[in-house]
Amino acid sequence: MTQRGHPDENNTLMNGEAKAEPETFRQFLFNKQKGTVLGRTGKSWCQITVFYIIFYAFLTAFFVGCLSIFLKTLDPKVPRFYGKGTIIGVNPGVGYQPWLKENPDSTLIKFNLQDPSSWNPYVTQLDNYLAKYKNTNDTRECGPGDNNEALETDPDVLPCRFDLGIFEKANCGAKDQYGFKSGKPCVAVSLNRLIGWRPVNYDGTSVPEEIKNRYKSGSITVNCEGATSFDKEHIGKVKYIPEAGIDGRYYPYVFMPSYHQPIAMVKFETIPRNKLVIIECRAYASNIEHDISTRLGMVYFELFVEDKKPVVEKRN
Image (tube, rainbow, N blue to C red; front, side):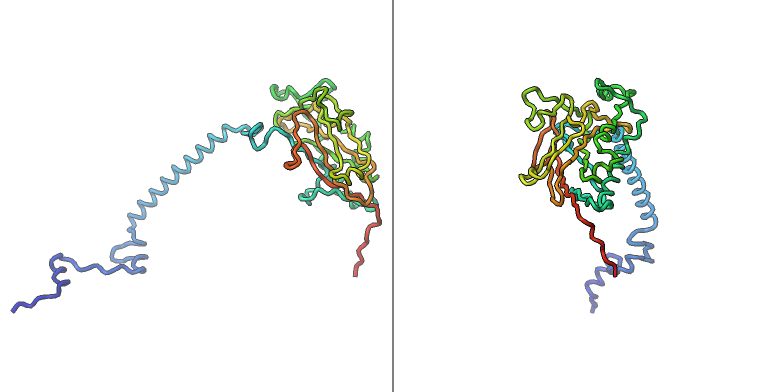
């Protein structure tokens, strides 16, 4: 009588090989019988390493080549996209100084007439801001009929030199501590630098009423008022230096280290004591738009002039 074997044993005999056992995790890490590490032989690891070295070398070379070509299309002196329809736009913003970098989120100018330490930071900030005008190298003296028009076409032309003497004569200079010591603070007003921008004159009938008596063709007239009816009532007498505002001879702006950005000073001669006054300053030219929601063409800051004895903290 013939004895039959188990079906699995018959299959093994017919196929000529034993059934493979499932590989354990330990064998996956290192299989001594197959000579593999993490499922690959030494030859396989060598091949895949060489492949990825070559692949990433080509990928890096491609990226560097593209970046190099892109950088060659850029002009270090001019933004790639500027002007109408870009995020930079064609409408200059308005800035003011002193603006303390130690408290960049604050637009409050606050000091105590009886405490010199309270206005020293503002004086120092204005000193630092105006220090660039002391460097007159690579600039030229410009008369009333001169301007910076040739800067755009002739690289050898030097920019006009900006003279701070007009501010000194109005007691808005460093020797007078920019009016802070006397309670008549002077605030510098400037426009943001836009490549190629220049002011467009109003015609005789379109000059805004608030600047009609001070407007001068070719300039950007600055006008500061109280932001609310209360502020308008308490802002007091305001003096503009120069009276016509920012001199348009210094435009257009062209990127160069020696360029002198024109500014104007606003002197608050009778600002009240111990009252917070919110001030809105606008720049006027035919091609400057004003928008309260986005603050185009204008800037806001607060003035608070105290006149009281400083509080001395008692030490235990």
